[in-house]
Length: 393
Image (cartoon, rainbow, N blue to C red; front, side):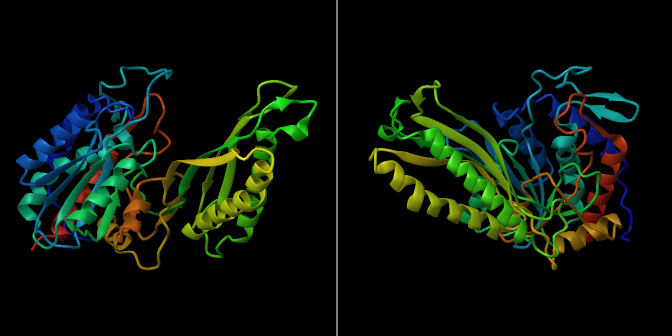
């Protein structure tokens, strides 16, 4: 185990900073610019080189900052700035005012995941004093909760600038357990446009609901096929990729041929090849079977699939520097997989090794009276302190 650094002052700084961050109501539908500007100021004061990347309309931004030598192979400490809504939740205290009670810090985002962000930024002055071997990067993104759009934009920004970190530690709440794998999450809405008519003459119309049902039947068939494709070494529960049909909506009345319908569905692949298998099969099914039948009656008939979000899974790897480093830092000798998704797969697809490890429990995330324990923050600071010493010259 590496020598313990003195991080006693960082705990009080972290708690104070977390209170400041909770006061920014960065619900995904709102801007995160004020919080990003605040973090940028703190990191610049700590000696970091800071870059801010705005979205297309300038409403939100990613932050990427660096402490240490300007070279490839750095270690990224990553967190998302957005939080889920508090509407229609019964909170015991104002959700955007952090309170402390019995060793816990309550507020929206305390564990998911502003606690990790506060810990990382509080350690920045320490990193600036000690890190010499390889850079430490801070990556704070937008819109993780609604599709990981910020992380995807950030890796493209890094690609354009030729920045190639080697390791990513994503500080989602895992109770400081090391997570080396999770399924992907791909969400879609498929819309069917047919031809309305009187229900007494079904051959003169194109019933969008009926074709949507055939599409769902295909989804059910693929759902069974995916069971057969389960990797022998899969540790997920269930071990195969899954498909879920969330809703089927269409039609206006009993006696009217439905001209429109839509299917909302998702898949959670354990491996990227499963997602490609499903998408290829559905494309062929629509182009070769459904659309020719629809257009034989109505040339303008259409099937269109909207991508709501495609977030890569984090695939466990035999060789994973990120896992090895965090095992060394925490003293743990095991790594797990989890059912919930994170931005880790996006960093992995960018060529980085990645793990998920952060303070707080996922059991508190997204719920009223969300909290992180002070003990968990201390464990996170201990890990980051050891990281700084590991990267000292």
